Length: 268
Ligand code: ATM
Image 1 (cartoon, rainbow, N blue to C red):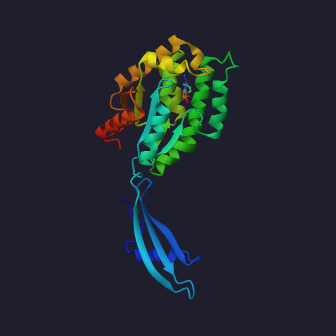
Image 2: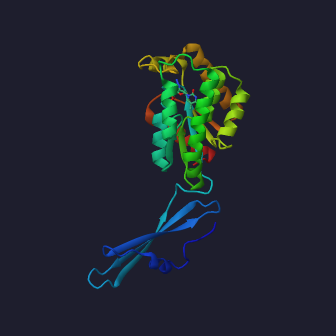
Image 3: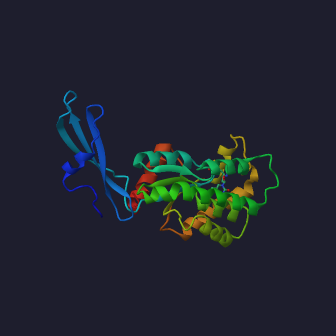
């Protein structure tokens, strides 16, 4: 660890702003990769009348969500499995950046509109794969990589593994080709942990029956069965990276199971 905050906090007082009679500024402890590991806030109360420096307070503000190797956690699963809710809950509980694929950037939001447009009937599976990979390339470059480099955890609602599941297993494109395409698109940045919310097939079907179906949801039962089987195959093949949690029961219960599994793995 490279300590850039002054050993003697008084040195920091020179940076204090005095506009409104009080001032504060922050010093940082920065890790080898440039991540801000700890904030060191310095407050100075200044006499309003004669501007003589008054009481000085140095607070160490630990940043538990910042580390040199922050986790990059993807939530994956079938539509309606509750992953968006769980991803948001976990992100807020650990102070992680919450994001999504597709649509995690402005450019991605435009690509997402295209992907979900039910008036489009002739989007070729390869074009679909390239659009999802383009969304991801922008997302990694604009959101994921800079956040991880700053030492903050990232939680994403879907990731490259959705492309393997939907475009690979679902659309039956070659899995290795989808992998290579995305290896290039992500510049090699893949989730360190995948939380797969597995759902009984009939539960997914029942949840989807209550929605207006978009282009993916309307793709048919066999397509969705292949996708789910694909997720299960990937989870079984890469148990160090994947955590499977049964998405049944209350939101609280599933959240507890996720948290316990992540703690047991030492991810958080
Ligand atoms: P969300 O509603 O979870 O954001 O997903 C929308 C659809 O996008 C989802 N379909 N269903 N049903 C899966 C699809 N999708 C892909 O096909 N490939 C991808 O790479 C991603 C990220 C999503």
